[in-house]
Length: 258
Image 1 (tube, rainbow, N blue to C red):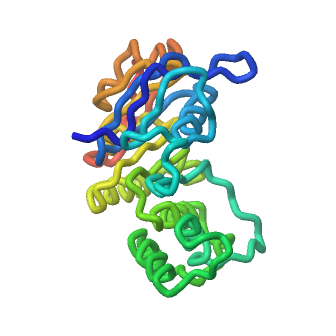
Image 2 (cartoon, helix red, strand yellow):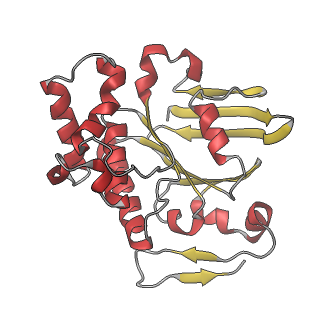
């Protein structure tokens, strides 16, 4: 299977502080990888390196065989959803306008979107199950609805790799479950590769194909259930940690203590 992402010997320091140490991992095309770890463990910094926004001290990153800085006009291989920022009231954009923003890399900043662009935006909204919100003001939507619009925007350019940074922030537990179901459905329907950063290891284990446990260094990468090993959890979060496991086959959460 072809590699969507290959990271080898990656090291990153900022202001003399080590952020990432000797990170190596491979993500095959079409797979769903969750990157988990504590706040300040380097998850967002790793995404910035992958996206070409931050240069590492050493090591390499390949996206479908190319370095991030060599993608050129093929940068639409990425669909990126940053950490959620709530839109201010009065932000004068309709939902469809927000989705069309995801096409600016294709149509250009100073060109007026055409009929085909609006059709593509509507297709993405329909894919997210929110076609009826097309003309709604974006700032009036709930957190979950805004996240669905943001994913529609990220998908508008038909990326091969969807990158999400803490996408379920500010969404309640029920909304998070629906959100992860949505992502899993997109993976199967579109055959897209998904890379998601989250702090909620208990929620994602039922949905991702692989988990990478990151706290400056990579403590584990592989089958999601293997990440729940006591030694992995101790290295990642410390000696005493509670995990809430969300399961599709039961009606309540099971609390596990390593």
